[in-house]
Length: 114
Image (tube, rainbow, N blue to C red; front, side, top):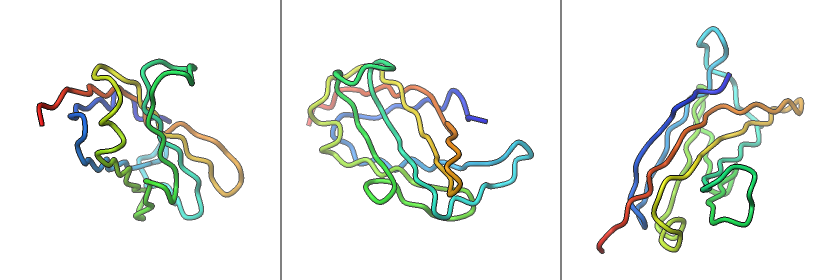
């Protein structure tokens, strides 16, 4: 089950680490060993032509253990995209090929004066 309304605010060009915990229906952390994870941030769902940020396991996503993974955003990820509200979503594919959306929400990308 996806954790919904995982909304946050960040500034363009900021370094940010998202800490995401995946649990099952009983609240027990899910073993993510060997899982493939993709995290996307884009302005509209189902439209690949708009600016977006994509992170995946080994390229911006770090598996920590205990059902936790980090999404590491670097300044270059958001410096050149317009400010505004974006959707974000993380999807996990386990070792058996099962796909689950584990978190969804919005990102308010604010302008930075520096």
